[in-house]
Length: 79
Image (cartoon, rainbow, N blue to C red; front, side, top):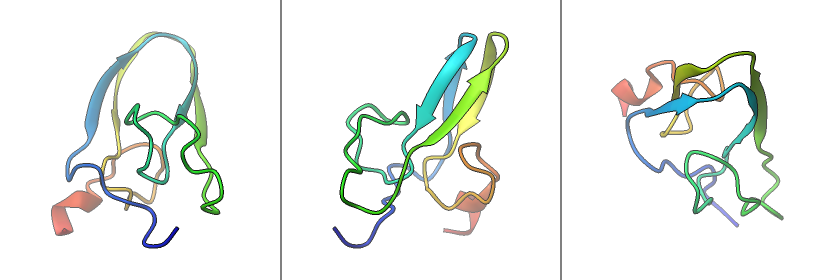
């Protein structure tokens, strides 16, 4: 696989999440964006695990250029 990670959109995914554990797709290949479905296998990339202690709205990176994965830092603004 080449040219990874792949931007799936040039804006964040706004998601309402319950307390729990999550895996963000770092490669852009998942069919369950913005979450990992294992499609990265063999790419050399790995999902980013994160946990929430309570229900929250989060903005997860869609461009895959964030310096604060899995959270959007506005990097898509320069694309």
